[in-house]
Image 1 (cartoon, rainbow, N blue to C red):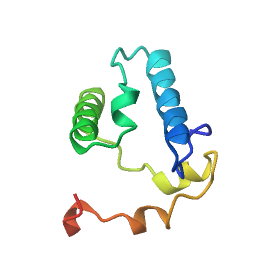
Image 2: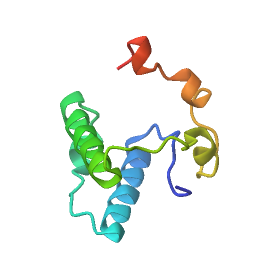
Image 3: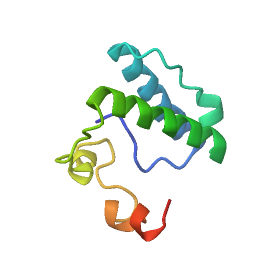
Image 4: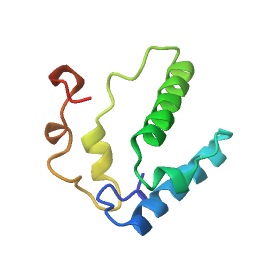
Length: 100
């Protein structure tokens, strides 16, 4: 997490983040290739497909229980850039608010 730049704006910064992701997948033995060239373009369908796969993988690994005590804002504070754009979770619309 320390190598992730949550404030990445340029294509180069995003590319670096996706390479970190692919390296972590490789180290954990996850054989899902991350198609960086597609994801970096930010197209909805490519991002949605990857996120659906990630959610399905997470559910399989946690047996659907999820993690209830995960503090994303605290975790990001340990990262390369510290604070996230805005004020973290408060700035992102929740599913209950119709944000996604």
